[in-house]
Image 1: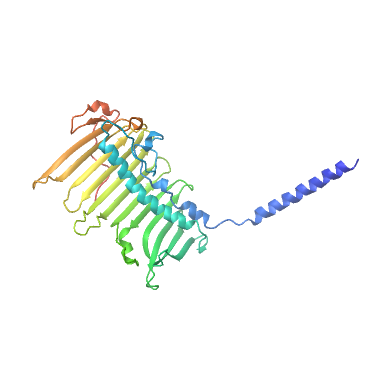
Image 2: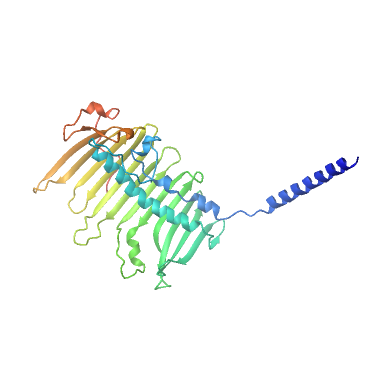
Length: 334
């Protein structure tokens, strides 16, 4: 008759022993010193410019998914399509940059403490250059840089290709800056078939702590054809809001002095309006100032054009709630 009492006592002892082991394990558990640096670095969705198509599901939503606009037999707004792919062109480059940085941090760091963390140097797949990623704490900020050294000169200084400063609110939200120096790649070693594809610099300021904003500036960008480089500066500003979103774009042709500005606004359904302004050469030796506006239906209606100033399609009342043109941008070109 004593066996139940013995079994109960044994279970109590076993439970107490397991509890002691768990407490001991928790007390000696080692945290990964690199995790705070991984969490501080921005994710691609924090630095992505939204589009009218994104807003069909969430007001001012951010996305880097490249999907075509819907198919329709009715005229589709050219400005809606243009705004969509302009956003994706920026998103694709930024997403690649941040994906590369986050891929590097998935590996154990070479050195890490409470002041800084370093991954590398490591040799790239072609065996040409040595790379490293360094993240340094600076108060509440985390300064980071992806740099490289030409493999042919071990004494050469590391060249910063991508730099940034992050102020994390949590591992998914925060604000900060990042910069890409495309021209710095010329200081590295390259294979015989290498040809530079991107030129100039890209500077991005982002903040997704509440309503997301992304401000991106391209300087000195140009085509790779040396005979016809099409040199230009560009400025993008995206602002998300519960009422939809807004994307402002300005291009400056450095060869002809022509300037094109585009302000696109859209509602949560994806319906929107774009107002464009061109100033510059008219092709006949003079100059011209030209204005154009388009409005379109929502995402479910495949962004069908409902108003076009140039071709006298529809009436401006169809642009509600964007019934008034807004040509002046909140952004500036250098």
